[in-house]
Length: 329
Image (cartoon, rainbow, N blue to C red; front, top):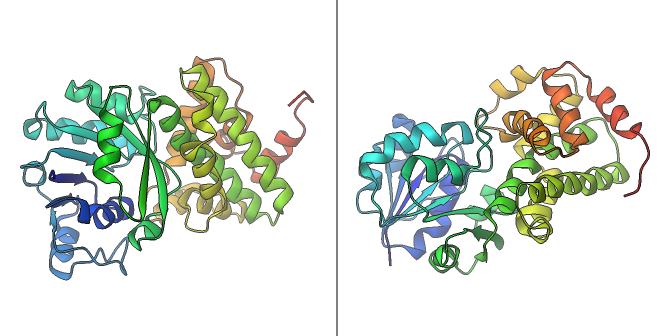
């Protein structure tokens, strides 16, 4: 049995601490906000993100990075994508080459267009890195409802080590050798989910939603394959599974952004009113840049970018998608 450090105490990090606690002697949960960390340590709940899900006794909550990393053999990072690099740079003094690194971040770094595992490799200088992703609303995970995800790494044995360490009665982990497909699927689905929220907010029905999900999967797969991923990965948990969940589930933050945009609220107002980060807002920029870099057609991502950043109305963006030139599927 190994000790686990979870870096990031939002809803997803807290849920992972709860569901993985039975698998480890000690789970250190690092929380950025020192006042929240102190409350969590005393009250044994995360009153901001998961107020009705108690923390197990072996979860130690801290806002001290060095203390969180001390004695850890697995480092599971659950921070927003734009914080991955600065946080790993801060963590460097407490890291060593024997550690196993797992990224549960579902986003891409804006300026570099790198996936989270690539950022970790670059900063830490290790190949012992895996990505974990799949259809997994934090609240349901924390309530020990059955959940299946996938762990992916190009390094032999790493995904299997994560699978063995993390799998439990309600948390099933599959292994994959395709972190590109897993991370692209887990990131781009957030962009498509904003569009799904727009459809719902406009009062449109199941036909439109099914079309969006299907075509969203198609363009996500095109991008992943162009980057070196495997098409079958996108047909699995980190692709289709997470896309369906995020596009249709009421707990989806990115879908909520789209719903509110369709109802006339401004993006800044929506984002500032949310406790948690909606990764799709920043990922939309990266998706458009990656589509250009790899010469991949991504019309849904392009329209979401126009809607979020170029003043296009939700109604106009949907009209543009429907009136594109006709072609074979």
